[in-house]
Length: 452
Image (tube, rainbow, N blue to C red; front, side):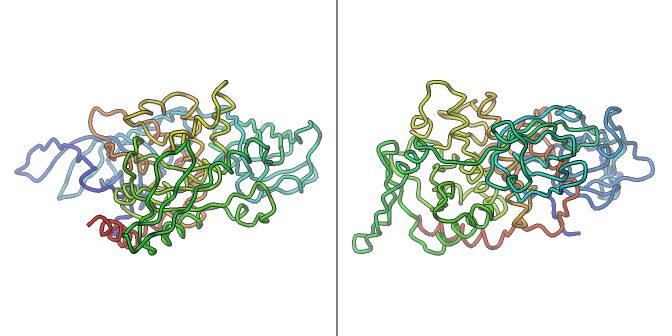
């Protein structure tokens, strides 16, 4: 059987210690916890790289508060499995479905751009359909209150991509999210934002082959170090190709004269001398520049993981996470937020200057948003979205385990993204999604060759 579950390198996946009983009889028994990553049938599935089989004796312990549709086996579901080996195969005796972290019938609210062309119809009772906002598939029903920013009624033709939607919604007991109220506002660029975009433009210093100097990117005083471009055009073309494929089509289709159009550019760079930041940080600027450190390319394992990392940077830029961060941190100037050259939306718990920040409510909300929206970007291009939950941790060199290591609390960032897969991507056909390991391995080899 082809293993299409989420792959994590052996060096990072700490195998769960098995309690072997009766080794002479060829049997073993143990329990473990982990996330479902592949389903062959209701009686055969994968938890990470652990293959589980069920039989007539397997007992399912399903939380009583979950409706039947949400109690069915899904990718992203957290399970506790108790069982044992028989003839080399692991059979489950008892499977406990962990309760949802987020309560069913929970209220949701936020503000984000409409991500995809709306799937709305004008019925006799009012507008109805699906609107993707903030990484959520909001269900619009006739009694949903739809308003323009001035408080008046909004026409269907005004509900388009690149429009802000300030929403209030509620997740029903069937898992669907029903919008109760949405206020729409056109996207625009004010003078301060334009000024910050302009200040973020780098000077591109051409390569000097005679003196064996690579091309460089030199930013303003807020980023004092220069970034050497990786001197391999294949690497640069690859980074640009993957990055641009993830930019939403509506952004690409905006006319050059539209001030909300973002000029996305992707550069593979070497870690500069004198750099004091964390190399796992994505370096994205509000003008659309995303720098990809060679350490990131050297750490990730396939193109789907790399695309996940890029998609979060793209979401940060398009959704103006910097500005939302700034507006809620009174007295902090935007320039200070990007002064270190880092995205100020930390992707994972880390050491260094941003240690522990992710678990503060403000930046973590923005991280959750980027992760949710990144899923939509990736799926649109056919990437395996099961790579998303662990990718930031792999880049940061943190422990990645699925099944979860014994006596280890499930990281909140992993649990949140897995829950999205379980709730909002239950109908995804994972069989045809791509990881592109071979293509990425070639690029990793070229990056490694630069340092030899």
